Length: 83
Image 1: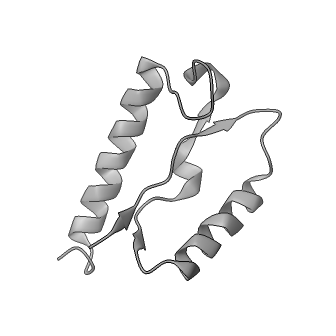
Image 2: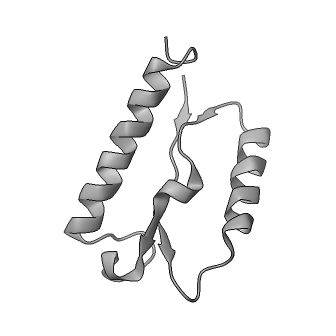
Image 3: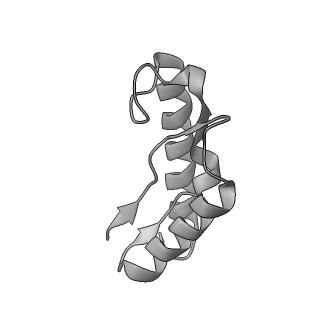
């Protein structure tokens, strides 16, 4: 089983519209033979929770992202796909 979780996305005044990320997620799901367990909108983090680039979260951001990933995995496990 291959599961895909989305990376953190910096959310602020310079971020593309949410719809573009939702389109990206849909395209990803359509093209891959894997399960996307995350919803892109759950991985938006304010600029303050990044320390240098879009992929490097502060300690606070990393804790929040980890908790979201755990929730996504638990949701997948309890779904029909994860059973």
